[in-house]
Length: 425
RNA sequence: GGAGAGAUGGCAGAGUGGUUGAAUGCGGCGGUCUUGAAAACCGUUAAGGAUGUAAGUCCUUCCGGGGUUCGAAUCCCUGUCUCUCCGCCA
Image 1 (cartoon, rainbow, N blue to C red):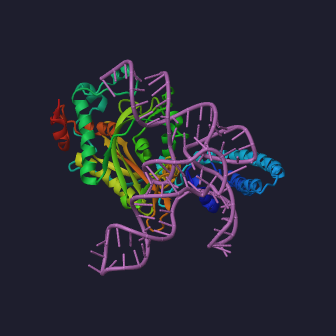
Image 2 (cartoon, rainbow, N blue to C red; image 1 turned 135 degrees about the vertical axis):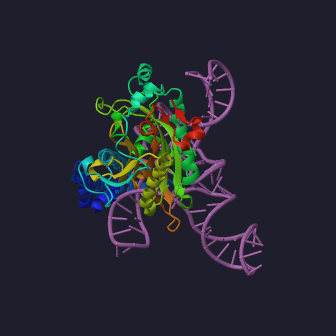
Image 3 (cartoon, rainbow, N blue to C red; image 1 turned 90 degrees about the vertical axis):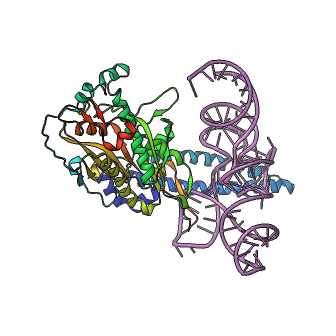
């Protein structure tokens, strides 16, 4: 959520920010509601002040033996007016609230202006030693590999739950678990994160806090009976750890890493890109979340990307980094890098991680602050998160890149101690 | 799922209709004392909003929502959460 005061004082800047994000221009609507709101506050506060004065006057009159009947009658009228105007005020404020909740964050000045994913900028490409985009033999895609080695069973997953719910079997299941453990350990040992294992069903306040709701509501699963949402990403519970809290500045930055399954309905996205692992309803992800001081958040974003790169370089997976343009940025993000890994069978890059700085957009919604040590005042914190990484897309890249000409799959060396085997055959 | 108790400032904990934004203790901050620290003593210590160049003034907030009343932390209804007991259970 954005700051009303900021919008009021920088409305043209804000208007341009909305346009850059391909978003509806709601500036004038916000400004006029805000004006109405302030005028109502001015008038009700005046009446309330009058009422408060009478409140201390009445007992004093009684004590002095005077008859307060006239004051009581007058205050009855004042009270009715207050009730009426408070109702009006509430209505105006809830209108404002709805608009603000549906209004996206605006992007940072370093983000390239653009309309679609075509306008994203590739900032880096990293290829392991000896890698070539051309293969000396016919590579199989991850679905065929999964079938051949009996490590992924999409058909049975569909039987159990429906399409998009992959079943890992045998060495596939072990490899998946190894990947998760490797990534968690790496972030813990080399990048200074604390581990969390969060709940995977969360309440509505949490979903609103990180901005999945109301905008993305249709893409979320919902357990109606209990009013709980299966999380689309661990970002939701982990960011909400500190919802409504004021953190001590000396403990910042607070950095968490956690594994969770992720659930996404992906409404209306059947067909294209939906085969195998490319788009699923349930997948596993290791997620990093940081709470930082505002002036450090863009440095922390760069570090977050490096944390992801370290994992991919250790796994020796080819990847590239995209800086998303304004039009391709998500609702809550001010700046975002996507990290994509190479799929030789698809002959294209697959998004495996997304690292974003939300500035104080989520912090405002979730009311997460820190106490500024100099001023002693609470200020909104900046939140960031990044996938480190999602295993499904990563698994595609590992299986396809590590297949050998003689029909086997090698296991990346850093995973050996986690898998207990070096080859899948 | 059933029965009962409770939710107050950073924490503990008073307060049952009228100067109570809230006693007291702890903690935090500033000071006196001390070579320094501790102890002791004194002072100070919430958030949000409106208005104003500012100093300030005003409003709101005692879990959330609704109600009674001139006036609610306090009374009524409702929701959420926590605790205790019973039931069920990995």
